[in-house]
Amino acid sequence: MVSIDVWNASVDFPIFDAKTRSLKKAVLGKVGGKIASDAKVPIIEALHDITVSIKEGDRVGLVGHNGAGKSTLLRLLAGIYEPTRGAARTVGKVAPVFDLGVGMDPEISGYENILIRGLYLGMTRKEMQKRVDDIAEFTELGDYLSMPLRTYSTGMRVRLALGVVTSIDPEILLLDEGIGAVDAAFLDKARDRLVDLVRRSGMLVFASHQDELLFELCSSALWMDEGRIVKEGSLREVIGGYKGKDPFAHMSKEALERIGESPVLTTKSGEVQ
Ligand SMILES: Nc1ncnc2c1ncn2[C@@H]1O[C@H](COP(=O)(O)OP(=O)(O)OP(=O)(O)O)[C@@H](O)[C@H]1O
Ligand SMILES: [Mg+2]
Image (cartoon, rainbow, N blue to C red; front, side, top):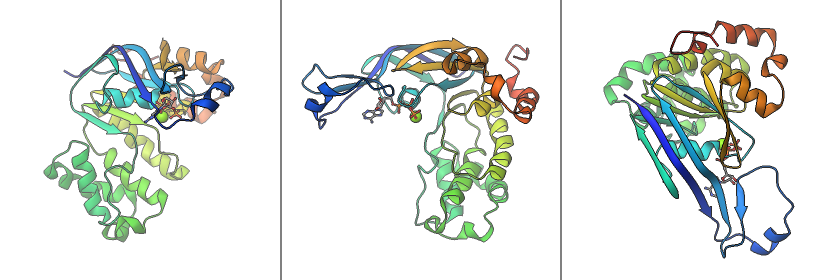
């Protein structure tokens, strides 16, 4: 059984090299976590008193403006950050996909990077060897896979990284957006693999600013603001609250059809949202 439980957790970042004097004069910013400047050292409260419980089969989307705390929460769930106060417990094998480039070595070939990145995401060498051909075909990189990664363009790297990421079998998939550098045609191709990946995983937490992708991959959502959870519930409700308008009102017909057809939208108990 996989599970995530967070109890009254806060994550603070003390900033030792900040210019405190200019802080006092600063205008009230709209983005980012709260900055407490009354102490000697300014502290950014990235997460404030978060309590959340995520169960097997849940697919949760994280929404909120820049600096709201989404990536910090994902890192807390991955065990990369310890809570400054409170507690967090994640049971299960975590595949953290925060930065598609992490774990990639520019000096070794695409093939070798596929293997290394797979190991980083919790797969075994044998499992990765079985998947290499499929990944190679998906990336369409051909002979480039024998070239060192440093010869790749940004989009080519993303293709490789996405090929690997979408080939794994994660218990807990923590996904932070970052697939913006791929061209539209390739994203279409990756979309099906992403949906498949999510279906295979025991649990998903996905931070994103793209409503369509959220609807395709998730079945519920959390809205974060200034390090707090403001609202949780169905995607439509939560995204509607965050954006101040019904998310379906501005989606293209194709997007709505895609969402409507997506089996991922079926909840555990079988009802379609
Ligand atoms: N390593 C760090 N050191 C100091 N402050 C940080 C650090 N990481 C995040 N923060 C601060 O924590 C707050 C939350 O940041 P976080 O990256 O979690 O936001 P986010 O919701 O993921 O935003 P975005 O949508 O832009 O990705 C911000 O105020 C940010 O300035
Ligand atoms: Mg982020």
